[in-house]
Image (cartoon, rainbow, N blue to C red; front, side):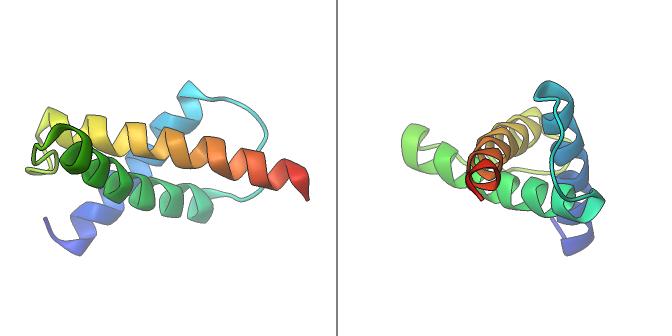
Length: 86
């Protein structure tokens, strides 16, 4: 996947993660996109390490979306945890 596909996937995964975990978070669309992109990478890495599968196959693959959303949820939870402490 190209960089634009990763950005689009990250944006959508970040938005879906925020819909699954609603609440007031500091940061706007840029933070959501960054959390989504990093979440996609984290989800792909976790899929490879834990399940020994290539979970980032292509933009339209279900495994890519699941990995990105799960990774985004993990990062959003961590972001909220650290943002509350400040």
